[in-house]
Amino acid sequence: MRSFSLFLALRYLQPKRTFISIITLISVLGVTLGITVLILVISVMTGFDRELQNKVLGFEPHIVIANDDLLQGWREISKQIEKEPGVVAVAPFVQGPVIVEMQGRVITPVMRGIDPVAELKINDLKKLIKQGTFDLSGDTTVMGSLLAAQLGVNIGDKITVYAPNNIRGIIEELRREEADPKAKAKTLADLKGDVVLPAELTVTGIFESGRYEYDSNILLVPLYVGQELYGLGDAVHGLSVRTTDPYLAVNVKNQLSAKLHDGVYAQTWIDRNSDRFDAVRLERNMMFFILFFIVIVAAFSIMNTLITVTVQKRREIGILKALGANVWQIVWVFLAQGMIVGFFGNIIGLGLGMTLIRFRNEFKDWLAGVLHIEIFPASIYEFSKIPAVVEPRDVAIICIGAFVICSFAALIPAYFAAKLDPVKALRYE
Image (cartoon, rainbow, N blue to C red):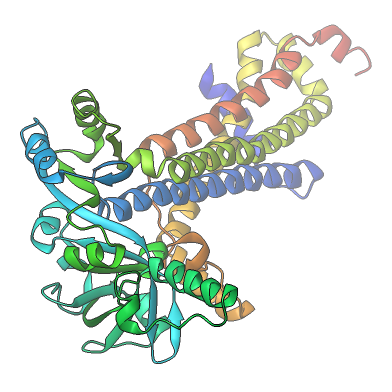
């Protein structure tokens, strides 16, 4: 039965200089375009999600322990956390905005004061070093590559870091002098107790994480330098925690939350970056449904083609039924046409989609050179290259879904063709 139906279906699909052949070609191209764009977009969006997670995990801790104020007695808290199952290491940190000056250039990055020995147990920052070494012994600093470029610094240069508290102290002194012009201006010695003196740090290393936010805005300094600039004494802003599995960090967080008190709370890396992850996944799902309409439009084209064929082949269908062809033989003639269009659209679209994914960055560079614009600005997307991850499950859903839609589109005209009365079809023949 199916061999006979397939034979007729292939005969009807043979290229001819007719309007039907053009519509059939457009249908195949429509399915091809839909599958190509779907595979490309979904793979890129999945790559964004995975790459964002990798960049975050390569620089941020799995869990952060903090409170709404300074974390006092952090050494005792660290010992308590280290005893918890699933915890690998704990390290203190101080983090906040500072003012950096270098030969007249002034930038306000985020300073992160760390204990280098303890921090390396949390994240292997040495592997991110692009120039110099990861050396935070003494009055030294390691900064992001884009931040170093903005300041124009190289290894061995000295930068001056001002604490934000200095601004408050200076403003108060200016207000005091403005309120009482006869008041004696304070000298540097007089202000020493009110204003934190700036730190002069030597640049020992420049890192590159691949994420714009980190490379352009992070300044790593020794823990004690951060404490001095913020006037914290022995207190810190929080503790970084590394777990055995970052994707199970929420379980460790729940354990810690049950034992932490006095306003101290725990946040996983997913909690701190949930807005970015949720945005990427929402865009990915929305793009999937929106772009799938390309396949649906192609399916309507297939349906339109087969409806036209059933009208043109009305006499032939009547003859076949008069000769004894049953309903399913007629159905399979038209259903096979839709399945063949869907099959070839799948194969061509899959091959074209995988090719575009393979050469996505080369195509981006070529297009940027032709149009003389930046196609993928790192300052917006936070990545220097277009990431992509091909998930076999996603590809299977796209290809199978497109094939089913094309087959279903062919089923409707096939059913009406099979229900045709041969007497009425041959009445005027």
